[in-house]
Image (cartoon, rainbow, N blue to C red; front, side):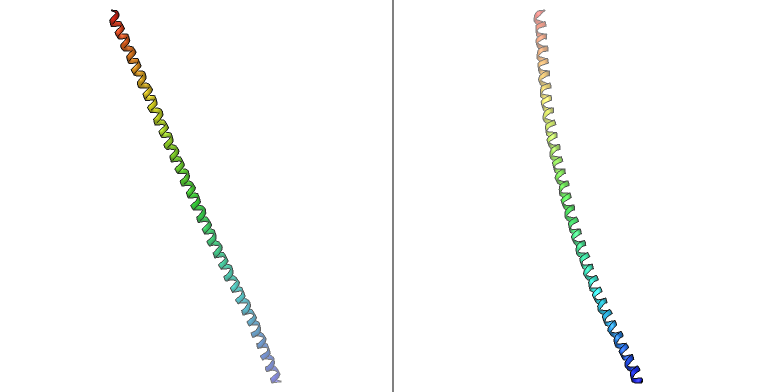
Length: 114
């Protein structure tokens, strides 16, 4: 009878150990899956950060290109304004010279006519 009880205890222990072994395997597999999931998450985060950095670089390049175009446009506008100012000053000077010549001619006519 003792042998039967002892055999039952040994069988129960063996079944318990087998169940623990299966549970340990399941825990190991779960741990492996968690590590794989974490690795995938880290890789995805790295790719997202790389994509964000690329997008930021592209946007900064676009801003620089836009600023360059604006500066070139402003330079063209200043050059056009300078040309227009020079032309207007030249026209005004010509007008002053013509008015002075006309005034001189009138003054000479007045002197001659007296």
